[in-house]
Length: 434
Image 1 (cartoon, rainbow, N blue to C red):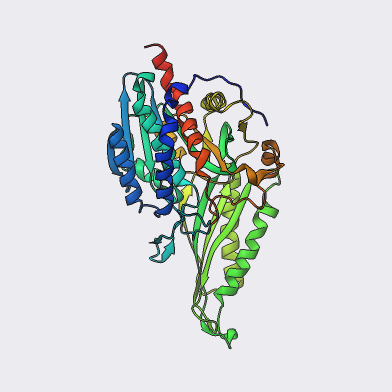
Image 2 (cartoon, one colour; image 1 turned 30 degrees about the horizontal axis):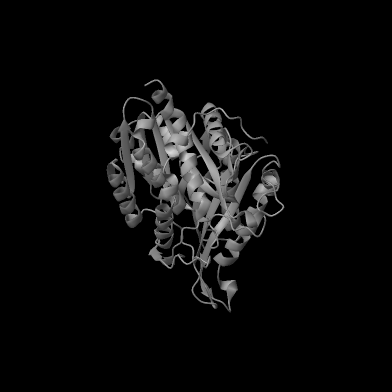
């Protein structure tokens, strides 16, 4: 692992006035954090983003792909740069204890009322992008080209394809480069990315198991789908440990198991939701085949009266960073943040993203990076290289935890800076010759 060389155009002209803007961005971030919205329900968030962009002078389109917002700012001839932030929150009950903690609830796709929290930092992403768009609008004399600001809905369940399906390619300027970022539970001030595969593919399965219900006192008259589900859950743990090579990356998680209504009634059905992560096509195929084989085999072994139903949903491809563009972004971020703050990730992360959908659909290079949002106090005696090698300490809440919340300062300032530094590499290129 290594830091990247400084090979970038200066971003300082685009940062002028950012310090004065930060209190407003913090207020925006805290407001968004306190009012999270589930995927495709980001009506309030989208309205705020659209209003801010209009105030800044952007041409704004709302309702793209459901609740998506797209802002376009054309500033003379030059490259088209796409900057993206996601807006949705998660069905998680917040336990951070922050004064602006969420107490919101929402209705999930199954009709259940659930707590809602920005447990993945998308509120930070929105605030950072709106800070960057404000700086770009305020300093048009410093750059040339077109910026497309994308406020995307439903990243957690695949909102990018919905925007593409809603005519994104024809309705907005076609990007020459797509740029995106994600806040991470690493020390604030550090950034990590890598050329090539940077985040894993994600396959999700809804599984319904069929049994034959009856009285809990007479299990011999039933086919118990709870026992069947338990057998599947345990057997699935062998897929990665026994069917995937140690040098390959794979994760199989059963994140949801529901069956029955009462302790003395054996139900007719059990429902599982399974998440599968992989970084290579051959491994992905092997995982999917193994998971389906185990589900069907355990059902047969249990004497299930009907074959299981296995329905794929919310599938994300591997997020792949363009090699040349990634090196350019690494140089730009190093120039902005300083030597020793930008790292090449040693391997593909097992988290997944739909950001790459934009670059693939546009046939344009894309770059995605992670920037730290955690207090350095959580990382005493741990240097960044050790973090890359050993992973997060157990005491640090990770994304999707009910305790996850980036510190607003200086995370907001750094998140705005990284977006502007990366964009400036392309936008400034034409301005230099103007």
